[in-house]
Length: 92
Image (cartoon, rainbow, N blue to C red):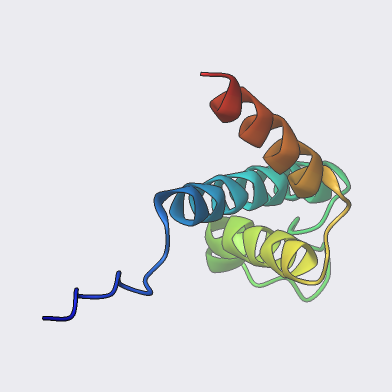
């Protein structure tokens, strides 16, 4: 009888690295959103503003801008965070 070969699914280490990378990217996106908001992105303009709706949903626009920045390579913060988190999980 032939033994059943191991599954070709992701290993626990690969799954953990994927989760760490996603967490690092979310943190970078949150950081970038705060920086963009501080720079004035998402603030209602004085002329031709969108009113109360623009004020309420401006943060979603800023967050999506930050997510797109991270998707296109970001500023390198996610990679640094990922490496640091990976080292910490390997130490324990």
